[in-house]
Length: 240
Image (tube, rainbow, N blue to C red; front, side, top):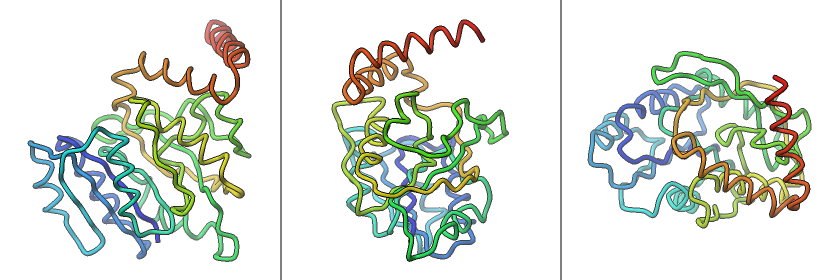
């Protein structure tokens, strides 16, 4: 089973297409777990409108996005966890089926990953994600930045460790590195898995997010290595 986790707070403008996308999946073994932070717009009405036997939802105050994700992970029943934010969707109705059929039960990888498309606020395709997913992913791959989109990074539930709440905007970056360090096996599906909405907390708070990512990279890869990599990022951007 795949548990799709959607964390919401006043997500009425974007949530409906996410609800539809999960509901339309042809793969039968899906749990859609929605953790809402006590929204006061039309979010709860939308959730109730699309409620079904595969959906579990709660609405209560939390301490932000990553706290809600931690809460959701403790509630999940699936073998794998996929974090799909409001406004994000699977590429097609058979996406989950294709993901889960990309391996057999004898070889159940710890992490499954793939590519991500960027869409606008109405779901129109804009472009593929700037950073292409590495053919072979390791924890050191994230030295180049967020090389796999969080939403296209699917983790075995038994591998899960909580998000570090000391990071407000980039805890998913730290979490992906930690998951990769724990994982013994991973699988590149070589599929485009997710339509990612081109906005969000880390986009709105981009400067603070980048500062956090720098700190995270320095923690795992060393201060000198991180500085030199960022120097190369600047040179590459200027050349382009």
